[in-house]
Length: 159
Image 1 (tube, one colour):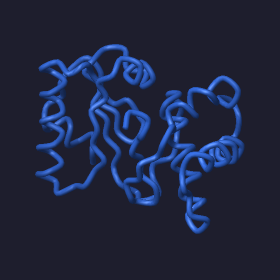
Image 2: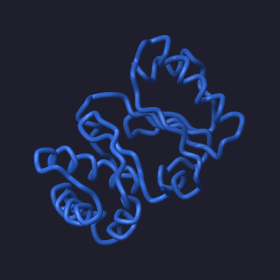
Image 3: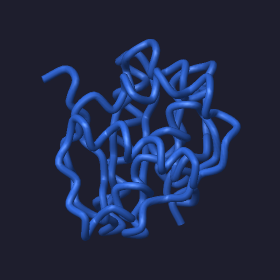
Image 4: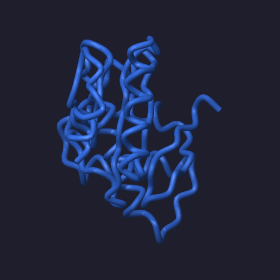
């Protein structure tokens, strides 16, 4: 199960096998290539390990490119569902947990839906570009590092 990663494909959470391995294998050669080239190669590699319906190839391509760019710490387009993608980055310390709790509280108060994830694994933290934890990433942009923003500040960042 460690080699299955959940990603958002067209607004649906899908389990994808060996995504992290494919990204690792491709990053040196494809980091500076166009999204179209990355998408074509990732589809080619991922179809060998996963069922990808022909009617959803475009959504999968976009999701694969987004995950590739996120992993490399490069700019990427948010998911096609237009929803918020929020990452709380840190090793699981009390301040990281406090930030995660505040983000959840603010999302609840605002009635916002979001893809909210804690990133706690060392290599994944390094890939985000956050050097001082806790970190807060909203739709791929690092918006806070090294502190726990107030609920008011989080609300402002989300709006």
